[in-house]
Length: 318
Image (tube, rainbow, N blue to C red; front, side, top):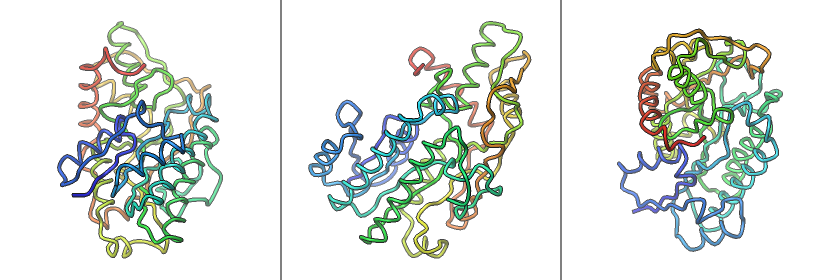
């Protein structure tokens, strides 16, 4: 039975991967932040040397929305680079042959042709608001590609679109768009507020993927036979887009959230705040050709996430 380490198992994505792996014949290896600091090279080395790990899902990351990325750029690039380099290198040194690195769609250029294919990587300038985070994620992809090329290991990368779901970070300022809006609209409903102010113009288009779909895709990509993966890949192209292939405007998202939450007030868009990239939609044809596609619709996923939010309102972060 393979021993599988899910780095970041307490985060939204890592927890979903752990849930999904519960259906597989594997032995899970877990270590939370109090037991293992992934930015500490010596600690990570000792962990891998002692655990006899066969596979790694690298889901650990420092993540956040536009405000957090703008406010803490040094933390975003440093912490993500350190986690990636430590885990990937120590996995290699300890003999791990299979690893899956979870990246982000922000790796692609700000004005990449839509929908964005895997080949768009490094073909233009990045969105300025999250450039440090994006550079760290690009480095993770290149680490995997480089170790594959030099050492013949099988380290793959998946690039998810915007994720949401149970276990998300609902901090009012440092979270991503869905949890931030969900919390703001929920609080407006509870306070009988006449309006909700939303950052930006509402016109940017975004694609959203439920975290349980992401977890299922991660396991699917990790377990794909090498020959099948090679049939749908350019040489050394180790990353695969993961998304729904469908996007919506931020205004449409906010209106859907109002419907889910039951808020009947007015939405006010503050166009003095940054929008970020005008559109971010992934080309997911490669993953579909490999036999996987998303199954959770946006509204159904938002309803489930809102139920979780209400049930855990006293204990969620922020």
